Length: 177
Image 1 (cartoon, rainbow, N blue to C red):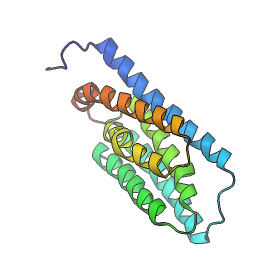
Image 2 (tube, one colour):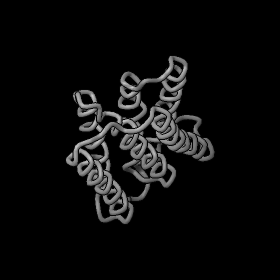
Image 3 (tube, rainbow, N blue to C red):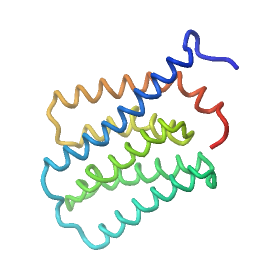
């Protein structure tokens, strides 16, 4: 099997732990930052219902995918589609409910991607790559963070993106999941 030059199994494991751990830590930091921002603005019943149903659907997709009853590419598409739709909603929303996305959905997907990546789930690679190379940096442009936090997050996103590249081959050549 062709491999990235000079990358052994131990190095790949280290990269996998780094990426999975940083996504989990990033999700936890998003939650803690959201708690510091204060209470979520009042939301309509529709917004609350949509958020609850969306969270349930994401968890169900991951669990069904984990059991092998849903193709990994569909699990990735569900997570990415949900995240992209909610990014659009957060940037266009004039009611202040964007806080729900930044404090709830984004950390949940980062935590799911990090855990999935550590568990060697195929769907976690494209979701992780999208988070660190596009969606995460986009969130930084709309999240109220100090410049030092933004700089640190961009550096971590870059390190994660570079670490994900040599992991692509081992992720997609493993047994189907």
